[in-house]
Length: 533
Image (cartoon, rainbow, N blue to C red):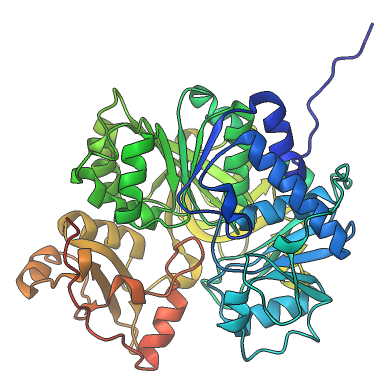
């Protein structure tokens, strides 16, 4: 009697598009802008055509000399071809290292040094722009160019047209399969090492959660191409055969006409982009009217934002699904909100710990578990945790305690595994129970706020940095009314939304804001932006 064939417990990025094309070849993939390396392919693609592009890129990368297990850093201007280059690198058995286009040259050089002579795929825009004054020669094995613009004598992938196609290479599922970097909210980014086995264990719960959406809905993704979450979202929806809309530019003015044309049923972006997309609720053409599911990860999302997004949908019983997790661990807990339940959400409730996949506990300063409902340091056990921080293994090991991973977040566990998030350990202010909770209150009281970030000032007084819609002024009277009954705060600092330091996933870099305040580096007062007609 034949043995039952169990699913392969590995997530191979290099085979992602090929497997999807075999099952769902003609399903459409719509881009908001052409591929930088293959602009002639246009913006209306299919699973099959994208799989062919990945296979083609893999052949070109092999042609230039890249071989299995070698590290390949991808650092170029933002475009969907970053994801295709990562998949193509993995397809030939090499290890993609995806570095955000937003990283400073100083950070890029530090990360390249940690990678120990990797290959570098960049483009003329980066090498002539931010990296123009940086000598990369001693840091990399060789540099090849994405895009279509030449730069010196470097080889341009777009010019290689005769590279023979190759069979894919699979590394062992416990070997390094992908390297991403942390958000950098607390300093220089850490390089996180993933293997195919751990990536699979992250994918599985997300696949189960998305089961009701299979094949039925067009899925729009506006996410960082250098975060592992983007590749898991692809893994989920490519397997299910959902039509895809891939957005590089999350600006509401760019998103609105694309959503009006493609009418997605599920959208996923970063929480701070969802805040911007509140403007789409009343936009001409009702671009959010077709959305049945909103998917939010990376950070907790403001209750006001949840309510506005759900109210903008014309679908019956729309939902916002929230996953709380970390780059090092994958998803930890999940929650879903309806129009009715969103009214009761206080923003710190991040749902229930994923049963069967994650073990979570809260401990005191000495590492002893605290009673249910009491705040403590959150620690986790799960199969999706990264292997190490490349070049900083001691730092990685310092976050492990008897098999438990210290998340760096403060929170409390309640009946049934419900998780309440308080603050990052590093962001706590003595005079405030929870910065995040106070920010939620202010966002709910002031509709004109696009963002509020509370950080310690030079004298440790809580300082609110605020951003408004289209940088419109906020009256002192409105602010005083909104802060009535709240802990004492310094006078608000009004910054342009575009001047707030952020990570590749739009997280606010609070430590950097604190440093800017300490050094007196205040951005110029914002100039209101006229509404687009």
